[in-house]
Length: 190
Ligand code: B4P
Image (cartoon, rainbow, N blue to C red):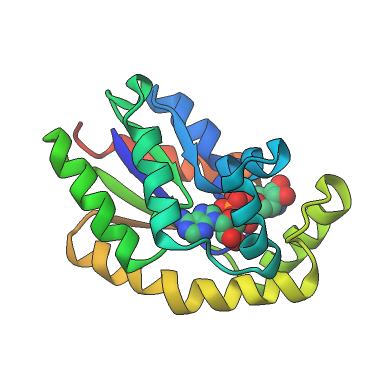
């Protein structure tokens, strides 16, 4: 399976990605996690990414695309993968199309989790108290929501037109959301 998990910041992408990836036996590839690992190791990529992440902006497409291309080229992603947080821009959609076409496979589904805007803010503010992520402050959260609306929401229409969009309610208990995703994806022929 080649899957994308989309949704606004706080929708539960990272939370659900590990369950869905395990269910389908594919690696979960989170661009946010890869950036954060680079930030904590102080790599040049991390230094560059941190500037954008702390401001609630997207890391430039060239940087993100190159990173994903390298990750998808690894052998564990050969049978399939779940992308968490990528693509986020139309340029990234195009780049991913090229990467997948090159392997001779296709994208199976794009899951979008929908959550009320105020619930999103509450979830992230709560996470700020436990995880201490530097982009989980109220101002930065609002900016991340704006950037999502401007740059990522248009992708929903693109994938809807392709007939591979699966829109799901991301409200409620984590386990219930997971079950909704499994139920929807298990119907897709592999
Ligand atoms: P991400 O790491 O993807 O951050 P995110 O959008 O906040 O999602 P995340 O997966 O962490 O949170 P989740 O919704 O699971 O990106 C961070 C930054 O990296 C971006 O702003 C950008 O700068 C950069 N970046 C990443 N990808 C990029 C790309 N492709 N291009 C350019 N830049 C990129 O969960 C949030 C919280 O909600 C958690 O605390 C969780 O416990 C809680 N939660 C989840 N489900 C819940 C539920 N059902 N009920 C209650 N709480 C729940």
